Length: 452
Image 1 (tube, rainbow, N blue to C red):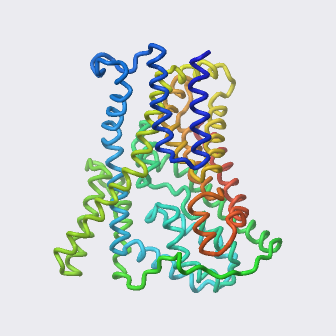
Image 2 (spheres, rainbow, N blue to C red):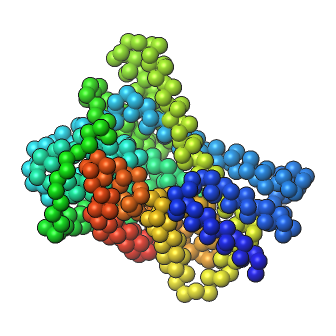
Image 3 (tube, rainbow, N blue to C red):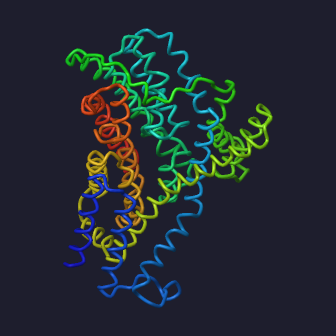
């Protein structure tokens, strides 16, 4: 009984603290170490004889070292390199050019409600270039918001659409997709193409339709005075580089799909492709500016971005992995399998449980990714023991983790949009909630139908 009470207590406390906006990495790390030391107290073996320090009380710390080494391998390096590339693209202005080029034709459209689904879908497309929801929101508020207001769109409608632009685009460049594919044992491009896209793309179109009708309904029901825009919170770029720079941010994506479809005999991964694209951008920068010292110095932005990837994502994955190791040593995973193996439609049951937990904690804390990074480590083991397709459980949880952010009043993207538009975050959430709920239900239903 104690083997159930201890992990459950630690897990509830960790979930509560994360929901209260304590640092997720620190909480998961402490929870994982606590579980490992509880296992030591119970006389359980943490590491085998080859890996053990020889002192059982030091083995949990050795476990931390082993997890860091493992996660800083292919998956950690991939995420760090992608973060570095994105940072460099932002620094040279390539991301701004891409956004400017794709949004420029929208200035000719004068129908505000026709723009609602268009902006939503275009914004999600732009998340391929700017994966950070808050960064993309600031960029779109600076470039698109004035256009939307000129078309006659209300402040809250424009804010709500922009707040839901970075959600669930299927891309092999997303950190969550890199991790999910690795943990589920599926090649990255295959996971994105054959599993993620068949669920996420129809969901995005359903959300676009929901946005159209919901914003139209809310505009009639809720008349809010236009308070203008806080320009001090915007990052407006005046001098953009040449238009061809807009191609640089999407080069890795183009390389991935061209090589994956037409040159399958070439065995090259995301890391190598990203470095090739970085080299192309560096050469163009050198030729255009003609300043070797300045261009090579700017390369430091790439490495700073890698550091940000380590701090923001890889460290969270390490902390989540430590928590999972603690659950394993406590025997919690085996207990979960034994307790649900006789339940009818156990796959659907697990999908609903994991997705609900992600949605609840994500709504309260403003981010469901910490929950996803924790659970994705144990899902393959649980589903394998129950003969359930891992994708049917992991995919809706992953998509919900990204979607729920746009319906949380404490999420960074909501707070940013509310601050710039001088609106109440709860007013923005009222406008995003229905499209997000429809998106979550769609991912659940499609995942169950296609992969259960």
